[in-house]
Image 1: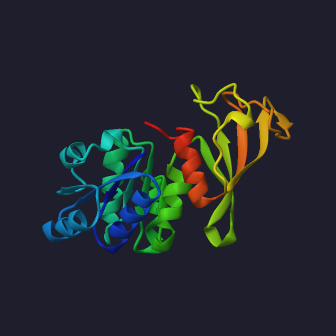
Image 2: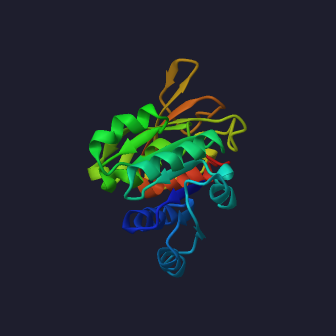
Length: 221
């Protein structure tokens, strides 16, 4: 999934690096040429030098094809406007804003930001948990955030629809805990079939869940 990041400082750089390592395709926007060069020289991703609050800059960065936008500059007003442009002009599904002043959190949400967070250390987890796709919902983080219990809504056109769990690619560090179909809970076995619109609960390490999400083609745009 493509994720646009507005802000190329330490937070934006770290976020872009981590998302890239976890299988996302980040594109970064910043108006500082020096920061843009640093990011471009260090990371293998698209960097756009410009004002991330402008629709023409976001258009040039391909924001319309992104599943999410995270605005992580040090200025709350810039982050708000960047999120509003992404949501209103380009219909981006999820927006996340870094909030420098925690008192502004409620204001940003009222003005249309999906998720406002003042603890920058949690930004990567928020991207993965809140933004990746409406079909994925983290139920419980485990092992100090290195694993989780996650519910997956099997999408229409699921690549493995109708196949049994024994036939489906499941990473080594992931386990299918349950399958719910039309309100009925199924305890999965090797011959249990996975169908479109099933709710599948997965226990997995984060790296394994990313691998599963890629092989199951969850969150593709």
